[in-house]
Amino acid sequence: MPYFVYKIRPNLVLTHIDTKDRYQDARSIVRHLRAERAEGDDADYRMIFAKHQSEAEKLLSRPKDERVIGED
Image (cartoon, rainbow, N blue to C red):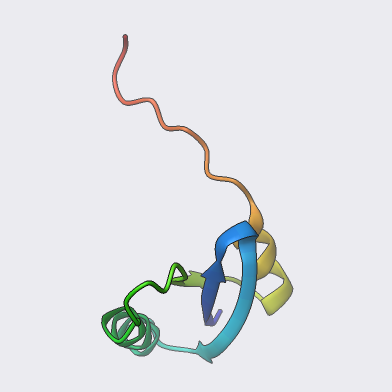
């Protein structure tokens, strides 16, 4: 399964940037994009492991669950 690299803007606007078969290649692209991000740019760059592009977009669009660590 490939790794998909996305630019994520506020309101979950997803822009597909690249697709790589190797984790290291996708990771280096994301790190480079984050390092070169312009000041004031509110976009985030992420990679996701998925079977196909539509699944990757579905996973990235899903809101994150609040994690509870330990008991209150």
